[in-house]
Amino acid sequence: MEMNSKKVVGVFFGGKSGEHEVSIESAISVINHLRREKYLIVPIYIRKDNSIGDAKSVLKGKINEEGVYFSRVNIRRGEEGSLIKFSWYENEIEREFDFFLPVLHGPYGEDGTIQGLFEMADVPYWGCDVGASAVGMDKVLMKYLFIGNKLPVVDFINFEFEEFRKNEEKILEDIGKRLNYPLFVKPARMGSSVGISKVKDEKFLKDAILLAFKHDYKVLVENGVEKAREIECSVMGNFEVYSSFPGEIIPAKEFYDYEAKYGNLDSKLLIPAPLGEDKILQIRRLAINAFKAIGGKGFARVDFLLDKDENIFINEINTIPGFTTISMFPKLWGYSGLKYEDLLDKLIELGFKLFKEKGR
Image (tube, rainbow, N blue to C red):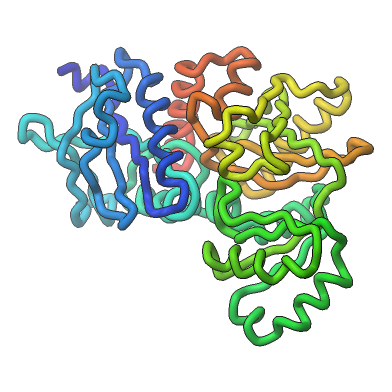
């Protein structure tokens, strides 16, 4: 095995969140597009109970197994320079990891938790660091940072479970006074539209809030955008950030919920989005500014809403967007001239550079 010439990358996938299955699909796509001449690949499957499972049984028949090592992975107390240590075994010889690729969507993967583990292990990884990942996962904190940076967002109200339990009547009254139907009710810290409801009438509002509370103890309720168009733009970079051409989603359902994203092939992706040149440039600039507002590094996907007059609102930012074969993030970069294999190389390169720039 050419250990000295190839980087050993650990691909984390699965996880405890409601996006477990999507993470598996993303990992399959990533593993199949990693260049074997550059990388040795160790898949690390995280079960829904957050324990390490059998990656081979999950991926068997779905990936090109050349250069892939379904190895026993060990996590133990670290030595000098780190608090913990990850290692893998090749023919019972203990090996080090060179780099980590978290392909974990939603809580416990996209929210800074596993990034903190990588920081403690003192191993480079791709994507946003702990702080940017945490803010990017929390739609409430994210919106306040956007507002602080004078970026356009829709009006919203947020509250936590205990607050709602004690002041339900007042909160529902405030929503009626401050916001306009239709409304969107969302768990603050979930992705892929899990737990989100579109509410057209106040009689359905409480049920939508209770549904959102099943996924997080923090909820936000925000104005819907009339005749909204859903636009997405990919960004990448550490200190110098670039944006892709934007794309438009035509959802198969009334809005782009989890089923429309991953279960309904009738949803359409229009790349590039059919917009004027000025509007495209404005969206690309806003995507970069949103990424910088949360302190983003590496890569992300920024989602926008356009109203009937083409006013732009930033909906959210995804710091570990989907990497499946139908996901917008790699497709947008593909249209912008970067094929999937080159995109992965670039994202790994950015991770190594950021690790060095941290002065370690």
